Length: 125
Image 1 (cartoon, rainbow, N blue to C red):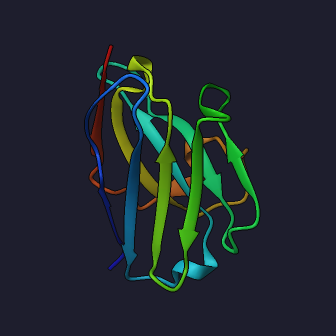
Image 2: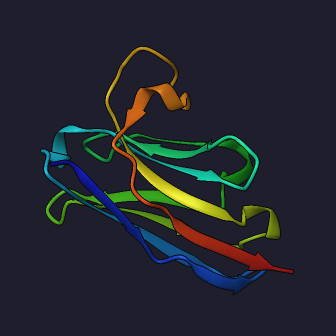
């Protein structure tokens, strides 16, 4: 079955960097666009970044542009999120997801399914 497993979260200070990983299995990873979302308690899950199946096209939410980089290694069935210059407002649980529709905008959560369990990122000031 489809499985997505995030890792790499942790507790860091403002200005630090982290790299998240999302290991995929159970489907043809190289055929699917993938994305990162994040969520804080009491708030909706929000789009962070998306990468096309071939890795050549990416999209980012405005709050992370210029600081975060999404990438993937189709040989390793893994997607990454390099997060630099972290801010306290980046504190959230980060989730990876497989893009399963082509109907809504790329940032619309309804485009995605098969969520991982999440990895917590906490940025102290």
